[in-house]
Image 1: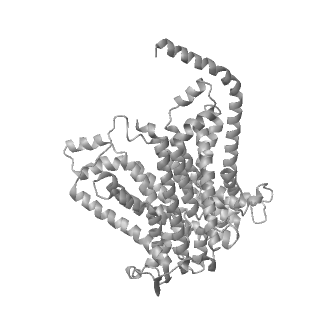
Image 2 (image 1 turned 90 degrees about the horizontal axis):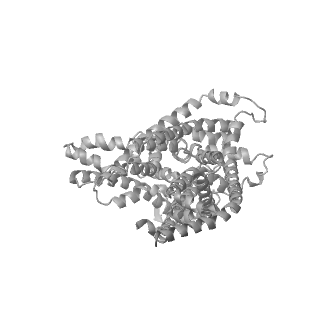
Image 3 (image 1 turned 30 degrees about the horizontal axis):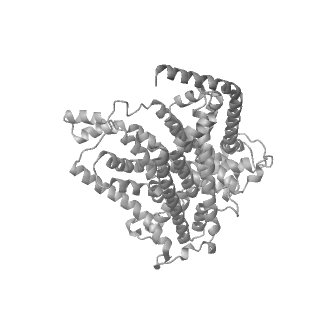
Length: 575
């Protein structure tokens, strides 16, 4: 085509687009305003106001009278508060140190060596993501408890207490730390390793001067992540913590045991402080971190080193074996007729209707919760990410939306759940009718896990050049057509990943929903707690295994759907 023809075609397209652009511009701005307002209102109701209610309630007494700092002073003067705070801190720090150390060695083996079976070891390490943290604690009881298979391995040491909390916490947070460290180590610049090899540096010196400094950001991030996960976790200390007091169980005792919502709010605020500190550190590190791979960088490809590869194979085999042992013991115990006297396999423990916890109805409620959360969370996180990233108008509102979307990352599940009680159970609240319903559980779970989903969607949308929107605007194409024809198809694989993230976490969560269920909306994860409290540890293990199996099946289905969508919508990326 000649240059004149191209010029005429371009001029005609722009001229034809001008009139629609003028007539549709005001409507587009109005629609953007409506979408922004709806998104802001949704996040304000789901996150902002419950957190505000939590903070406000701590300044009122049980009669609703303003008491200032009286509740805070009363809690701080309690003889047990120092012990709970100290236990929470040192157990979380120790768990984070052990977990990150183990995960770093594992990630190093997967990314920096030619060890055989790397795909297998990666898959095994990520299996605990699909199980509730309660499953690890229950399995440790079967291994090291009073009637455990390996109780003789702990002479003079009880499984119920610090040992159980640290071990259970390390097991369930291991895959979370591993994912962070895999990303950090996979972005190594191969040119640095080539330069070190040409200078005759030993493998140990290369590790100290190249590998370790390049991954220091990932190490700090993994440590902060595990620290926050452990200090805010409720399941493991509740099941295997024994008499060890921590902040997470203190909230549960204040709210459920003593019905002191005001004191529960005070403890929740104390628990909020380390989470906020970790969030602040993460944001500072993210802002100061420079890109590991530049335009001229070369991805690192490890070379065979027989001795190192064998050592890493042995190490990964031990870690993966420990994970499989813990998961396998839980599955075996759920099928045992009567532990430890009748180990013949049967489905006796799966007769949930004969146990405490709500029976099979709890499992089906969890399934509904997971599906509802996946649908609501995926749609809302995509909309919020689009509104933050793509429009060029309303910068202030978009900044506020980004702030609200990131807030749940700094709010522990127990604190958010208690905030929901205080906000949605208030008589003056027009949304009071939602309290105790499955719909409120869906909203709370979506809010609890919203930040990660929002950031994931934001990353996917940022992979598209802004030229798409500029060309569409110049041609008078409404933004919703660009959204439906460009942004949505490109983001479909990410949408499926986010749906899987919401589905699995909704099935396995305990802390965010433990205060909100009613007799009609009991959940499988909460049923595990109820059966464990009642001494029915076999059925508790069975329900936890059922949650794991359901999450694994859901992830397999979504993985197949993701692959199908990639083949249909992402072929252009390979050209």
